[in-house]
Length: 506
Figure 1: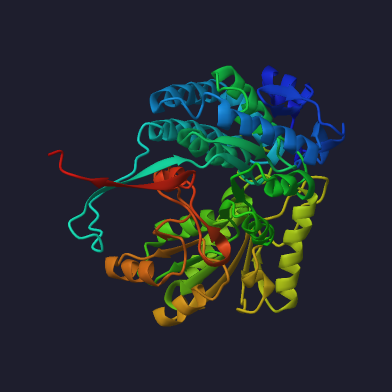
Figure 2 (figure 1 turned 30 degrees about the vertical axis):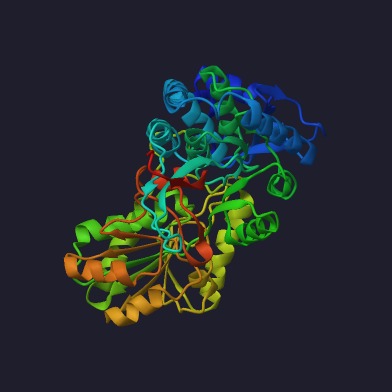
């Protein structure tokens, strides 16, 4: 076996059993076969080898799942439960996920190529915390009381209030870069609000979603509240978006697909949350603490193999420190150990697939053709795994594809600047607006950039840090709506206004 391929004998016994078991859709509280009997191969990106097969669901499977979710919402107990009742079940689900943390992390690492450290921290531990955080929101959804004047009714007395009600059936489509974590980002706020959900995970990484469905059943979530259908985006995903029984679509993925989903949802006036692509700038000012900025910027692009929508893929460094910063990030890039996800000393695993590897290498070649210089990396590792070296490109221009388009890989495009007016103009010169960061010791400078960046999130002296209570979402071509925090719950509710005429009891 290649040293870059996972040694599956390292897996726990429960994980090995799961990979060898048959996998089916989870619909209406039951695991069921796909109507077509067609399957999707699940590939280990460290080796290119088949590790499982899942159903290739289509429109018929989606229809079954939506009908189950619709029935559960319209006539089932979940929506009618009190907040504390939903909270207790969600807390039980979090406990089960925590109890199965090792298995979930191993499954995710083999399926996605990400290290055990990453999948444990972000897909499991953070998901456990998010389920518990959102369980608390089940008891805190509220409206407001208002004091209307109604000036065109002389002498009238009125009372007004708003009520938040669950939006209904949610269709959720998740990406492959943080598969279980993204699934829980969709499921948890929907459950807290009293909605039901149909989840379509990415076809490359469906295994933890199906394993989580087993925990859903074990936790006592009523039948039909959570449904999981595996399939390709163009078939199962498109059918979910188009289904008239779905009230809201929540999608995380590329801007190109998100635009199509937004257009399709608009034709039926469905609620939509879209968390899309990014080309986030990182600005390092001349006064930055380089002991913080250099490793922080390196992890801003190389964390999760660069497969983050908010990855800091464009770096702007003040001319006075440019060489020191580039040299420092390059040293880190050279020392990152590439290897299989299950190996304890691996610091960066493969990309999700050979297709993604070819895409990333294509962007690097395009940059070089256009005049960019490769400081470190720039190559794919030989062999069946989908590995790409962490890469830094310098001498890049604003019109280059590697600067303007989302690469979704460990590729940093770096350039220097002299004036803040110059750099903010260049940082905002993008169709995306998901995240941005500034590295400075000046509070005044930091707040100036906060107000000038055109992005949904701004980080100061860090990049890519997310918190369960802090809303996350983009502007421009990076999407609409928010994940995380109270905003995520509210996106799963309809706001109803109530106005009452009052009169004196005498």
